[in-house]
Image 1 (cartoon, rainbow, N blue to C red):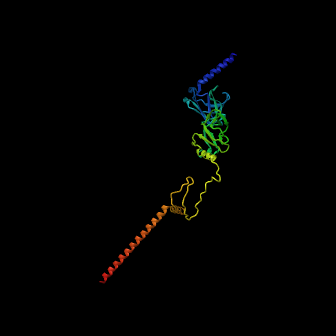
Image 2: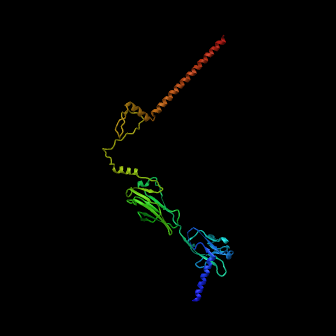
Image 3: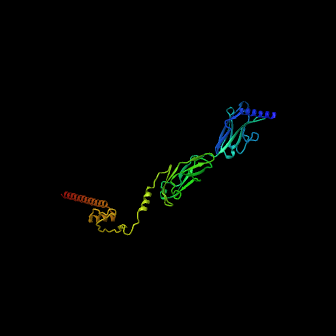
Length: 350
């Protein structure tokens, strides 16, 4: 009994003495998958400056497997993702990158020493990457307002960061479905105006998205009208669609006695005398006399407007005037030339 107590006391003294010889800044490290961590340690450089340092893995100090050491002799499958740097009096540093789930466990920072190594234990926990705040966006653009005409719209919930993410859609604080995409259509939004939102979660964190507001204007099974208001998307309404729906549901079907008279189409290229032109809405005659109407319609049917006809006549008249002036000038020059010839002949005859 006394020997057992002495042995325990001796072990405690050795551990305490070892902790004074080697001390690291972290006893437990929690990092996410794909991440990395760095451990910095201080040791007694007076005694262990030139001793071998190592990084090993195992539940106990006596059974741990050395992954790498400061002399570069140990080689394992994890060596390429681990690094140990002995900076002398500045300390000892261990870095592990690209963490995987099977990297979790108990590790030891050790210093080679005769009889009993100086060791410091570190527990490593590897978790999922925390999720970022999810964002909502429609898979088809809302700019054309498809919901005004009862067309379905699919909204996606997504995170930029996170691993093993689970997406849950809520409507009025009640769970709606467990999926990343929410499909809205006439059948699902019959009378369910309100806010929708998505929660993204994994084992280490959860985040809630902004709200998605759905307003059902005209509930129906197939030809409904609803409006979606989503952050970052265009704000729109269905006013024109509502007007069309109201007119189509309130206007009675025309009867044979109330059908408006059909307007005959002008297909002939000949001009016929027309005395009056009536507008269906006002039933009033234009203030044209018969001759003016006939001449105006003839121009329209032939495809030549009034200004074009006047321009053609002006150009034609200008061309005639130019030709006349040109002819007169040539005639005068010829007359003068003849006179000069006569004068010369007379002068030579004398």
